[in-house]
Length: 308
Image (cartoon, rainbow, N blue to C red; front, side, top):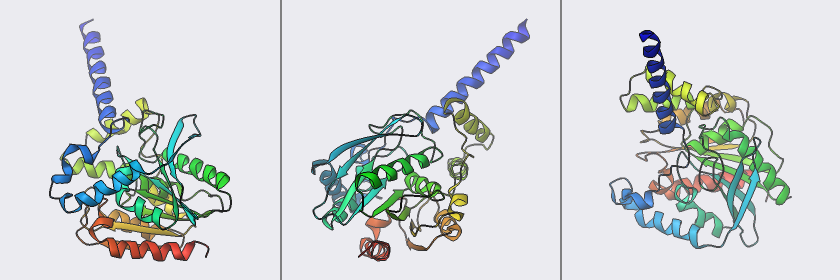
């Protein structure tokens, strides 16, 4: 009988450990707001602090329309639409892991809005006002991208659409790239995206000096408590089947999602493609580190894919 209790105790401990791993890795509703953590005063962000804060203020103070749609699995997905005068096209912007869209795109929202682009900031599932409790690193979010594209194509009928993502948002967009989009979607932009959930989790674990034996527990926790498999989709593989024009952006100093991952996605991509890398730019920092060069690449890409 003692062995039974020991076995039950071991099983209970394993399940508890698995749940804790799930909470740390995949549980949503936990946000990283750099405007409130003091990070903007650190070495990485300090040179761009005013630029970032001004951009966030613009996004929060400019009038917008709250929008909600239903995901393929019944979640309420929420976003903010900023209309532009004489709107020339719509940008759908997809933020990163445990982040906030106003932060991730702080320096670009005002720039593009002033140039006549409508902006649709979406809250990924398990973020912001959107429903759900599990972040799936793009495995399920890729379907949400198509739901937003379908909504936008129906509502803004006749208007060109560009879909851009950063970090996890970039990989989400790339995972969605293999399936057909509405004809109004003219191109995709992927800023510092990883090759697959599986590979980025392994990379981060190695970077944090965590033992490899934890990886099967991470994967198991996602399957048991999140209802998905981190090996269920790969941006790299979906890129091979893509056909829309795409622009890839990556910082060469990115330690979180190595620039090499962005290059591999670019090399695998099946449609018309361009890539720009920015020396010394860290994760998600390419735009602020070399704004003139990145903006020029964005302008050239948009001029090439949007109808005149």
